[in-house]
Picture (cartoon, rainbow, N blue to C red):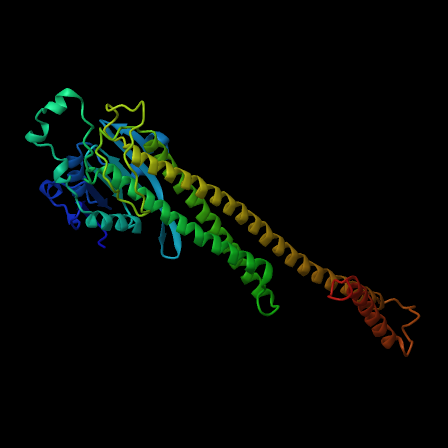
Length: 396
């Protein structure tokens, strides 16, 4: 995939690059990937409203991420993406009008490619011939004038609409986020095993320090991933809530008999009481709102999973720091033993190194060996005592 592109997606046709306004004719979905200023200007001309820039999509205010201007819904959210070994979030934008969907992104996402293939494979189904009214069928007959006849049962229009593409994109993105969260669970399980069940080979201090540093880096990366996932889920939840509250009956938006989805969901159009045909142009039909409601429930469950994962990351961080403190205490014990056993011999050497004239042991023939034995005993006896206390791996 090229780094920059402006594509027009038509149902049943492969994507086509847009260079002029004529290239976007009859396109339901216009997709901008890291657009150039020329592509941005062309998209603004096709949309009739300014296309958000990267700085606009990075705004964190709710009013900036979800707004309605001139009958079009402007939606944006950070989206988690794996860039090399790390996960990063970059914003994506959606502009939903009555007839078109504009998407603005600055990274290539597999979810968009998946839905693009669905759109390209989508067949436009025309109404069945018997469902098309003819002058003969509409002419009054004696039976029809005598009593009202039963309504005609026509086949649903299967035209692909912008709202359906947006819902399919959101569903695919949520499914992708769920897959990432599954990998996060496996990552945390592996990290937990490494913290509690394994130790580096060898007892060198540098090996232990390197192992502990690696554990802290992995815990930090896991916490960063959970935080970025939380931001993405929050943004997608806001979009799903906004779309689920937008109401329009199926008579206002023709509903296909089968719908574009990676979840293999088929719903019938059942208008609800109280719905108005004068709803906003970007509002979704009842079946699409049902799907968005399902997505909202999925997002809530994923958010709960992320909260649990964040709690586990905090627990693993505390455990790692606890093991580091234990290792540091062990080092301090060794230093304490070394410093303690060096005090008494130094004291003895200092006493017998004094140049006093009258020292009882000064002319003693065994004075040298006596002082060496006394120094050795002051070393061995504390070592035995520390070993009995368990500081040197002895009796515990």
